[in-house]
Length: 114
Image 1 (spheres, rainbow, N blue to C red):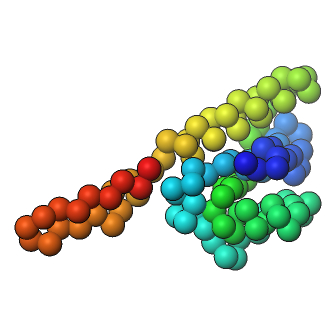
Image 2 (cartoon, rainbow, N blue to C red; image 1 turned 90 degrees about the horizontal axis):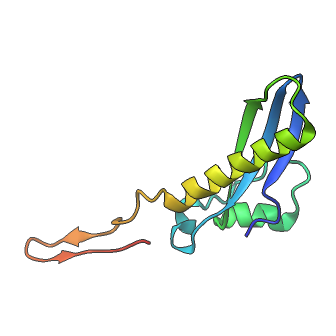
């Protein structure tokens, strides 16, 4: 699991720029792995960046406008909803489910990459 889920980077007027970290299902972590990956957040720890490099955690940076005059609680709820949708997307997105399945001309060997 990521150490944090949402990190606000900047606020300009009604625009927020923030990072979201999501947990990657174990069967798909190699697809997200990138040995050069580092967080957009300068406060990320060595372990945070290791998790991103290994694919255990995935990061996205979002810039989002919030309605003018929104309260802090409304903005927090909005950001939490954005993270919940992001985590659900990472959990459900799996274009690699059959990656590596083969056919030798006679028999199919099907792979299930959960």
